[in-house]
Image (tube, rainbow, N blue to C red):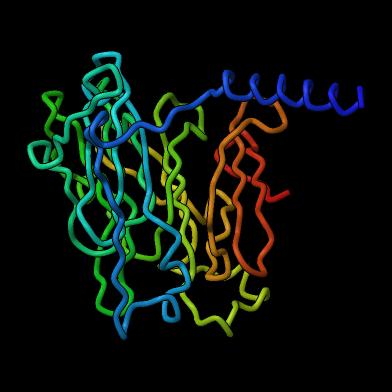
Length: 281
């Protein structure tokens, strides 16, 4: 009888500890004022069968857009309006999307990155989008922070208004010149029965292949230059990019690139040669 009593006593103690050691609490819209929804509507031309990434989701990025020490939130909607929520403190946010000019309501949006692209001390917004597929003609957008809680779209001015099958982006200083360059992660569009032939790996695809853009602002210019081919980055239509991570993997002082690919293609690890080029490991 005593072993049973001891068992229930110990179980009670562990159960009590679990209840008191909760690390997170779910906060409702009534507390945070965040009511974002990524609602999706399929049709005969654009659906899961025609576009296998239909339910991959949009994106979310956080950063201090007004330099007040509080982390703000930008949410990317595939088909609807994006949302920018200004952190007012104490887990309360204000929707400033419309006044800030960052709705991005047209076409299909994917990943989003908050980063100070032009090095002026204010965080900008880079929005990835799908374009050049069926009747979808979206281009990636760059919202430059004006420093007054408003933004101006300038992707074309900076040379990174990419039109293609864009997934996500990573900004990092691959050439060590003090400014942020751009790795653009893209994906392919195909049916569920048609995956790219591995023999196409070294061919280049304008819409599906990944891109590396060098930031030339330090040269007195205001745009990025596509250096994908000369840097050794694969840019084929069998990449199926899902994720990108930047880290100095071999600890030589230069950032390397890891790409996670979907379907039959292998992941890629690009080791930075510290001379503006990469070697696929």
